[in-house]
Amino acid sequence: MITAERKPFEEILELLEGHDKVLVAGCETCVAVCLTGGEKEAEILSTELGIKAKEDGRELATESISAIRQCEWEYLDAIAEKVAEYPVVISMACGIGIQSMAERFPEKLVLPAVNTNMLGMPQEHAVWLERCGACGDCVLGETGGICPIVRCSKSLLNGPCGGSHDGLCEVTGPDNEEIPCAWQLIHDKLNEQGRQDLLLKVTEPKDWSKSNSGGPRTMVKEEAKPV
Amino acid sequence: MSDNGLKAGSNLEKMFAAGHFAVTGECGPPKSADYDIVAEKAKPLASCTDAVNITDNQTAVVRIASMAAGYIAAQNGAEPIMQMTCRDRNRLAMQADILGANALGVYNILCLTGDHISFGNHPTAKGVHDIDSVNLIKMYKDMRDKKIFQCGEEMEVAPKLFIGCAENPFGDPFEYRVHRLRKKIEAGADFVQTQCIFNVPKFKKWMEMVRAEGLHQEIKIMAGITPIKGAGMARYMQKFVPGIDVPQEIVDRIAAKEKGEPQQTEGKKLGAEMIKELAEVEGVHGVHIMAVEWEPAVPEIAEMAGLLPRPTLS
Image (cartoon, rainbow over the protein chains, first blue to last red):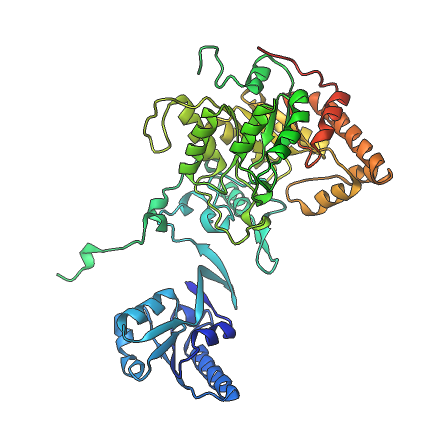
């Protein structure tokens, strides 16, 4: 799923400076599941903005609404009436939802309330781990189902660098949390599967043109297009 | 391959070809546009080594480019081994730089992954990692031997390269370290320099595995040595540097001496003793002395280890 984190409140206030009618728009899909931008979180942000405005002695008309999916035209149509009442929409959807909102309602100022950060897997309640880089050329079939593109800090395709120690990466996370070495995991998994030969294979340089390096991508399914 | 059977004809390659035990040093370029610092670091290494590694933005900190510093080293009598990391360049830049370096007379290249960008002085930069070090070796080998770029296009004049790589016998997974060396040999590496060795028994174990696969006959292996300047440095490496294994007895041996000069003398002695011991290990073809910010100590260590004078080859 796509995960996102709410921007710091101060940054949201800066984005909204000078605006006195603001709709907070949540999304009921990925950002709701990752507890960042669903109906409830949109309500909370709207309430916080209202309280802050009151404290500062400012007028602010704000309320919240939520779309089933902000990234689909039909669900944006479903909230169009409410959006029409506000000149400014601060969206709590992922980057795709925010841009869909801006495209569907071009006359509105659409602002982001979240930072979209990764394609993550919910490991346990309230913990998400990055699992996919959407590189457009999946190698999981040769790496024991462990992605070296995003789970190795250097995206190595031919084994671990010299910094792998005790199963850990030489890099630690932003809060100093330990990161498992992807190549230790791949090594262990391929051994377990009896596919050690893959560890000896020299993997060719990756074709990054299939990723964003080739420019923004478009996917068209001709067979599914309406005739 | 050239007419004389050599791939690049560098002094380092000739040293191995003549069956000598090779010696390389290391020079870290400065964090400023200072020609003299590179020249002064290179000079003491010129006469006591066969070639000198020129680091490439080591520890992810911006410094004089390894190509330029390598050129300066050459002007001051030291044959450069230009280091090239996958962190700061994509495949275009890596090929462009090696053509340029080669045209300037740099023939030895060391292909590295590179320390992660988060360790350096620009932690908010984007790490490149377009290709990895195994692919980098292969790309340079194909440029040299097949006269082709990575994309398959041909070139008129191929670079003459003696291609090196690194391996860390103290990294994990331990047994995969030998397999990874095999991959690098298959990709085209001519020589390998190891991470600095403090845990000699573990290195010997690794060499046993290397010999069991016959890899010592397919690549020139240089054992990495870092002379310890003081007990503080030993403790720091023991605790904080990933992939370096410093046994407690080494820390204790240095710490038993007084701080300053006595600890430095002990560090040099220890370095020389280790070189002698490692030179006896079957399959070790040379030693790579990495005296971090302590380049002037290398001649003395080389002398004590019996490595001087260096053979002169035509």
